[in-house]
Image (cartoon, rainbow, N blue to C red; front, top):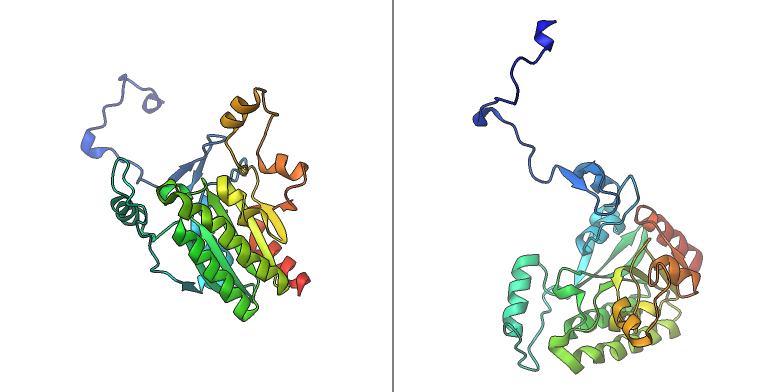
Length: 280
């Protein structure tokens, strides 16, 4: 058994003989800290198989999850922001837009498209938090309004997937106008009797919560999503009181009557198609 006894201390493997795991092979959950193979994490709809933590994902993932065979027609794909206020902070607003477009591969903070979901025709608008915090500017409001118009014209259900920090400060009043604009279009959808489902994901805050995110015929959410208007720190400082445990979590909001139900991302497609089938 001499081969089993380590005669020398330390590891003497030459550097050129060492083997390293490729980047991106493993995923560490930020909630439970457990390790999962990236492939398994993806197959699990980007949720942790150990604690069911829902990783923040973008429109590309939601479109892949919801549209049959990921086949859809994108609407207004090239619509981009102008600079109505000549806004400059640490950099000019047009420069910030161009830099974010290069970094993310997106044109703005929302993508819209239509296709089939379990053979049910549907129009989907999905926000991307990576684009300036998913902030709602003129392009976001316009693309959502046009998607609602398509839904009205073709009498197809409309799904809004919200993920946003609120209004885009670089557009000030122009951004706030999108709240009224989208809400007015949704009223037309309601009058036409066309279903509108609002899915709130982590985080959904600010002017988005105060407008289209809470106007669904069904308001639903992913587990543990942050949902609110102002942040907890701002509210705490304003009212001068400690907030309840889990305040502004999806579960807290559901308990207090602002959501219809919470749906796991893995079940999202089947739950939505079943709901829309019942509403026909």
